Length: 84
Image (cartoon, rainbow, N blue to C red; front, side, top):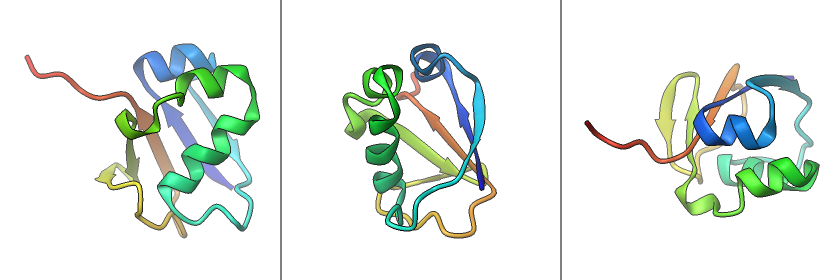
């Protein structure tokens, strides 16, 4: 089980702030996780429609989509951040 935490409009579209999820064995990287989540329902599909703009953090550290997720305790998923 891994804890997924959703932020900003990703959270709004999925309609939950976080969840614990059993990730299938074929889901190896952060990019694989995004593709898998899109299959879980309309909210997920809408939130992750453009995966290239989605940011991922594993254990509170930003990673690229090709980063392995094995051993992750927490994975954060959020839209691009803007400065200010």
